[in-house]
Image 1: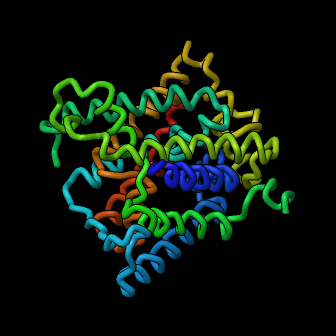
Image 2: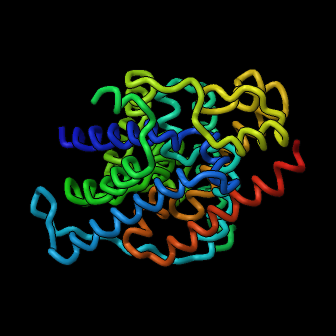
Image 3: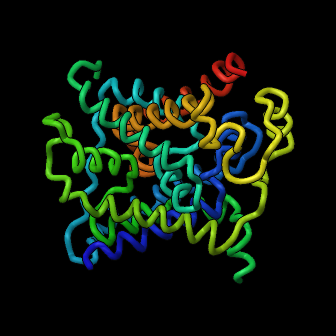
Length: 136
Length: 186
C-alpha cells in the first residue's frame, strides 16, 4: 500500500507522456531537426514549473506528507556526465525514446519497445560491469 | 471534457504537468524524479553477477520500479483507452525530410514500422534501431547518471550545472546521429 501513491503518479506521468506524443519517434526526429516547437515547449515548460516548485519547497521549508524535511541531493560531476550523455543522445535519436517513453510505448502496445528495453537493460548491465575501466 | 482528454495534448498543458511530477514525488515521499535508475535496479535484482555497481539494496528503491510500472500502465490508458490519432501530427517539413532522406512511406503509429517492425531483426535495420539504439540508451544514461527525466527535468529544475552538461551532451549526441550518421546510413 505504501507504494500505491507511486503507481498513481507513474500512471499519470505515463498518460501525460503519451497524450503529448513525446513517446513518438516522429516527434523526436522533428525536435532534432528543429522543425517544431512542441518538444522544446514540453521540456522547457516542465523545467520552468519544476524550478518554481522546487524554489517554493525550499523557501517555505516544506515537508513531505509524512512530516520529513525535504532533501534534494546535489548531482556530482564526473566526465561520465558528458561522455555518457553524448552516448545516450545517440541512442535517443535512434530509438526516438528516452527510458520513460520506452515504458509508455510498451504499455501502448508497441512490440519493439520490449526489445529496446531488453537492449537498454543489457546496456546498463554492460556499463556496470565495465565501470571501473571507463573514464569518469 | 472527454473529447479534450482524447485529443493530443498541447505542450503548454503537458509540459507543466510533467514539471509538477517533480514536486509531487518530493512531497509524497522525498523522491527525486528519474526513470533510468529503474534499469539499474532491474539489473541489480535479476543479474548482479558480483558487480560492485549492481550490489546494493535495490529493494529500498522499489518505489522507482512501481513508478515505472505506472508509466507503462499510463501508456496503455493514454493510447488505448483515451485513444489516439492514426498519425502523429508532425510538421510537413519533417514528413518531407523523412520521406526524402530515410525513404519512409508509412507515417502511422508512434514509430515508423519500416524501421521498428520486429521482422526487421532479420536485417541490419532491426539490429541498429532496436538493439543498438536501446543498448546506447541504457549504457549512456547510467554512464551519465540520469536521463531526460533525472537530468534535464529534475536536475535543471534544481539548478544543477552538472545536469546542464548532461543535457547538452544528450542534444549533441542526438544531433550527431540525426545530421551526420543517418545521412551515411540511408
